[in-house]
Length: 86
Image 1 (cartoon, rainbow, N blue to C red):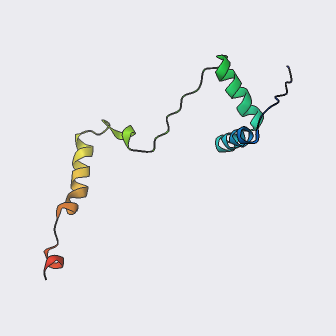
Image 2: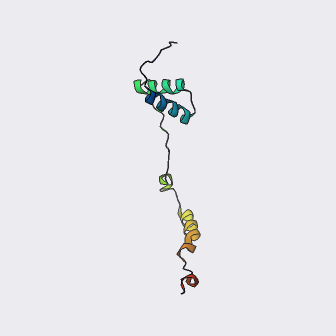
Image 3: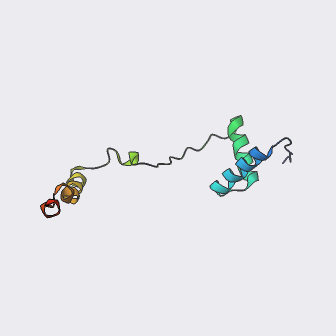
């Protein structure tokens, strides 16, 4: 197995790589190898879906789920007339 040295990595790139490795919970070496393999086509990039919204729920409810939801939010449509009296 070959050992290579990369030169010319500026501070900004080094910091970015370190943060990526830390966020992914891998070593810098593991991250660099993965990025090189993906960039050269030797490994296909593993796609993982990261959701920050509710898109993953779209179209997944059945009629029973919808009925349960509607029942749970019924109180939101009720108006407490006592708090609106002057």
